[in-house]
Length: 315
Length: 321
Image 1: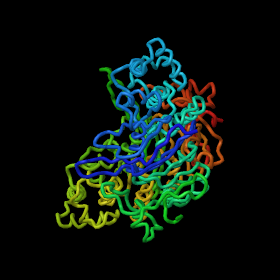
Image 2 (image 1 turned 180 degrees about the horizontal axis):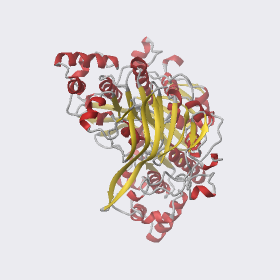
Image 3 (image 1 turned 90 degrees about the horizontal axis):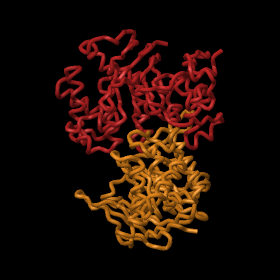
Image 4 (image 1 turned 60 degrees about the horizontal axis):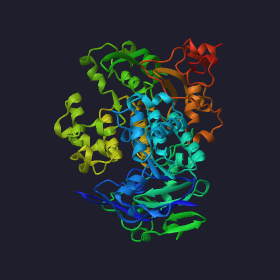
């Protein structure tokens, strides 16, 4: 059963130095209690896509076209009032830096309470929700009365996760939730995300630059490059059967422990999305690029069941 | 094997003030290590472990509170800056954030020419030519295209190459690379690492490579030191430390790497909680509040760094005989 459907989504930034095509025609579906990892490097459009899922792309960005259907409703068509209600209660977001969500000058309990009251929860109920969800994310009750700076990076991220799940949203979008954290804490937080997915049957969109993390944790993986989907497949299928040269390049760039050779790196730099390359957006860095790739944008092709690739090699 | 840099019982303190109260943070606590000529020594640890501070002490960018810094058999711990300056060109730092490494108002050309003029009094024309060659050497081609550009006009990967070019232009013998690729995208990371390795080969350099990425170290380092809360807790050759980690903390680091942890036959160790406050480290073994293998004595007595043979040492009561 789908909780979220994205159809042909286009997002552009109208900057002084030009129009940046951040997301170009992305479509996908998210099922109940599925974890979808959106993997990409800087400039891939993954974070913009994440924001678009909550209809909160900041200016000078604009959602040009497309649908984001949450529970049968296209939230891109919702009024500002409706969207404020939907955000946090039906779809919520966890950011890389919890400081962007937490006010440094106010105690956790006050911020948490305000958020709940804004969404129509009464004060007594709010207190019990706060207690319940801080416990659910493994924090002691005293954290309620702390200021953000008194908490460690991992604890702050736990607070943001508690707020993100407190109203039982169907979808939680987590944008690089562990990138600012050390590897051991990263594992603890990802274990927490896994347990939340199990316990509350939430669907998770995990936005990450780390293909290894995606392949370890997600159910499905979507690889983005230059604002386009390059490949989309179930984790096991992708791991065993990577098709797109970019996905394979990312995978080969991961260090293998104790191997005597360095991982490979892709030549060149990510594209300038003010002037995206014609044809396949990846072709200037692709070792298999053919004539066709320079002029014709490859369509998304289903190479096997639920495994989609945008590459002329498989056309 | 001859030694390029030796640190003996180094202690480094910083003063911080929190709510008007001054407190002392011991960022490095009695660490000794030796970097052999031609070696890549990998120093791994989480943020707050003191690894970056130790790297800067080894360059004598910080003067330690106690202990000694020996560079090429010369005690440089207490030398005045004027005496150290000529040595500075032999030791260079490559920091994590390239945008913080080059003055944003300078052009890349100016940033490269300056050290040549400061250290060697090179003529303007000669310095310009050498700067161009240095840019070519790091793959910023054609160099004329980059000489007049400012840091913000380069991508992260390009700027990190320029930073490397500037560090290498003085032909240093000893490099401290402090997370040089952590801010870069995976697809270009390897090319920057490869660049460092090529320089090392070509100019016979020794490198202290600081990182939180133990998988990366396993590919490039000869020896590894693991730091936790200001102390060195394990040291050994890269094969030994990765294939047969001894310290519970090293095991936990390896157990936490996505994908890789399941590929190595390793006894998994998971830690509770997070790295403590360096201003207020736990009594006894600093890992004991998080360690699943904790013994009674860990709570009260600090374990010594125990030599276990083959050049290996581990700071853990489990190995005390």
